[in-house]
Image (cartoon, rainbow, N blue to C red):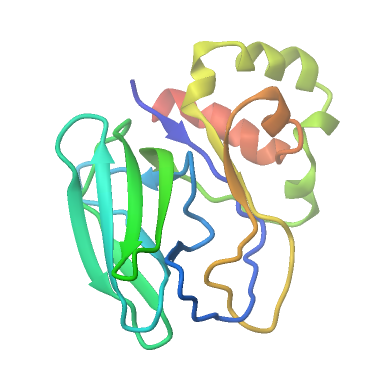
Length: 199
């Protein structure tokens, strides 16, 4: 079964860089996240985060089927690190753990590879599903269907800062449900529904 995974990112939030002793993934990466799948062109998803400056970081991908895969890298002088994962097909699932030589670690569960689509805009993108006329009739019916599992949502809160943020984006991933869809962008959600037959 193909999976459509549909995050919403309305505004990129910026805060100051921090050099942290504990290994962390950057804010976009968390439980139930979606990573871009390979569509036959060798697309590789990346994982990034922070650790102590110069610390060795090992990223372990434990797929639902197959042996674990390890990737290693060193954090740079301000603690940033990044690895590129092997291409994965739509629907592949895994648990991903990032561990530093200090022993600090962070794990993301329920990770799936699919198509990641970003939505951005102004007031039209902020209109929530709960505010549109067909929310109860149309959406609740869809959310009770098997297609619900093919959509995951990521919403980034509005904010601003004069310096970049590497970790604290403030958003979170969620499976499509009445509670997560209600406050989500109506334009973005209906776009995801329209794309489902083609992905």
